[in-house]
Image 1 (cartoon, helix red, strand yellow):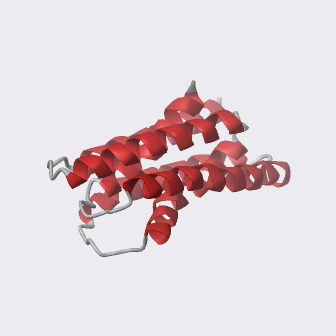
Image 2 (image 1 turned 90 degrees about the vertical axis):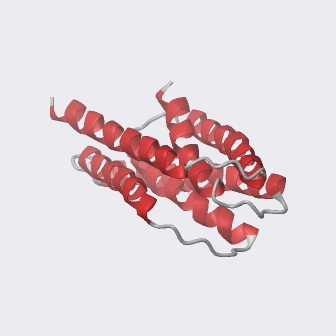
Length: 168
């Protein structure tokens, strides 16, 4: 269950970003690419995270907690950045998906169920990014900041929970 919720949390960052893009012409293609990359980057991250566990077994949980905390904090702090620029769809999808790489390193280090998280992240990202792009196109004003705060606080919470579990 934790992997499914985490897949949703990772997708919320994309929702917050895509709600700010009202003029995307290929919404389905962008949603598809972003979802695909939200599945590819975690495969790499899980592999790297699992590899790191073997090398840094004593430090992996601390490093994982620090990574998750940092990503959550970055999401919260990114609500201050309000720049909008025209970016090609492929670059936008990669940029929106890069955070799943570092998050999945942490999850790989915690030995969570890789494929459940990957499928969850892909499905949530596709559905929520497409809905976000559709809403942005309709000119409804929904603030992405709240979603970034929720995702950021959730990752910070997971990092603290993980850290506390490993201290005991």
